[in-house]
Length: 536
Image (tube, rainbow, N blue to C red; front, top):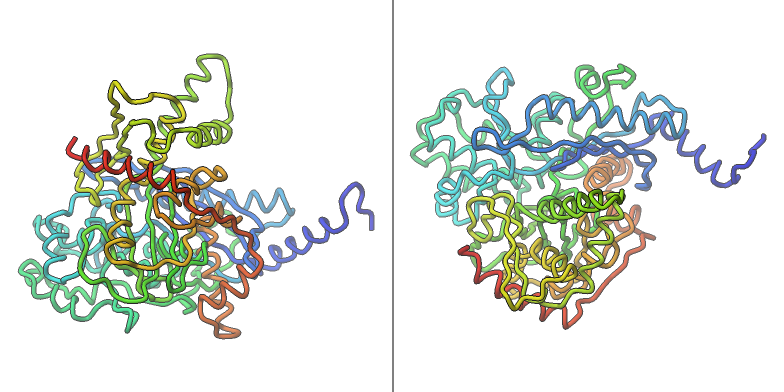
């Protein structure tokens, strides 16, 4: 056999990957993120074999942040087509099957359907802050924090508004749940994603029965023909089977017709659950920060919180353990806008700067900024931010005559601001409640530039933050791991934590950075001004 100029070992490794893909032994993970739909094909050890993606953006239409049905299904097909192209070009293989598939998406929001499966109103995403009234009433009724973005808040707000479609509701779910249903015909949801629709009882791994009963006694709920239990998707835990790809589902996903039906799917999950999985933070006293378009931090709890906090959600891991989550609608969107502006200036001056290099240079400049950003202040609220009671988007930069207006301070200010609302919630969790965290892992675009986001996040949390070498893989990789875990459960029953520790992360490298005392003090000083200026 002639290897030509190729390294023999690399050639054999590539052949192994080719065989896995050609024989349908790879696992497919697809996640619908805020700005990108991503697909990854992995082997049984979690190694990425190929990937594809599709860029998309939410729209603000008729007072609602949404994605159209065309956006969803066209984006899904284009993302899969991108993966197919990658596999063909890299390995010369035409994809026709997988060992398993997993679907994940942004949590929360509102997708309601009639008996025939018709979408009744345009998708209302997690980004909407239009359910304050309903969220408040439900929080009081349940004695449990119901955030505005939760699916139950959207349903109840529609009831309170007297919206005409409510009389036709036969089912409602999340984006991951809908895509999974179209692929399999099954109305199911992974417990982590379900916990963003309605509160979960970790003892039973199902919707909280007491709160379901309370909901049905509310005045508006008494007026409808359905019981809440009957319109919610069935809850499944990680490792359970969740249906198989139907003929219709295969055609929906793959326009070429090469993809075969019959492939098993794992329970569809939300981006919180896939983030926990992708960072191996599903065990007690572990936490993670997922920072991109939105930002959330999660800690797996040892015991219940002492009281209800509007700033803290209680959700679950993909296998049902209780998790405290601080979720903020805004993170890097405002930074991205400023970076793009600097890119435009570069073009004006005759320089074509690659986007990745532009982000790296500007993010890195933040390291040279003063610990308190030189007195500069910004708010990154492109949309409303319930954690700090800001109803509408209003990004702004503020400074005084005494502020040190330098590029390094300016970028550091934006890096701080991106985590400002998150820190408000985390301080309640870590300082007031005394929740213990043994390890905090960071992932998402905020951490893509080495050191910068990690160093600032450590200052925000006041604890070491680790970033794994897989941090850039994200939620598509995480749901791929959950699909692979389902297959592993069919062979040998392991807990999700055991599976991740022993099979996926046993030799995974991670860079850990402890907080710098000056950075911690500087962030605290910034936060005093940040909180004081919120009335702006």
